[in-house]
Image (cartoon, rainbow, N blue to C red):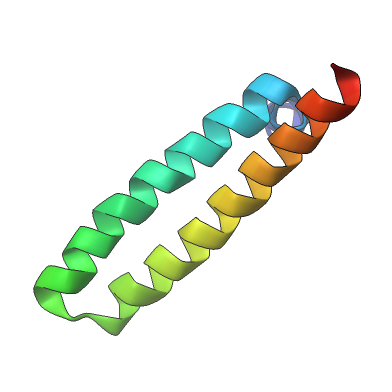
Length: 69
């Protein structure tokens, strides 16, 4: 449990938000490629979920950078 808590605490930092946002963006791109090639609804769904996560994390990152200078 401590490991998960440490990951969560790090995720809330500017660096953590940026890393998670970019990782989700890369994974969304990968799944988008799979979805286009295969037409799999699961791949389309994962692309959509990862894209939403990336937008949320990068949006929170930008808000933290702007508000804290």
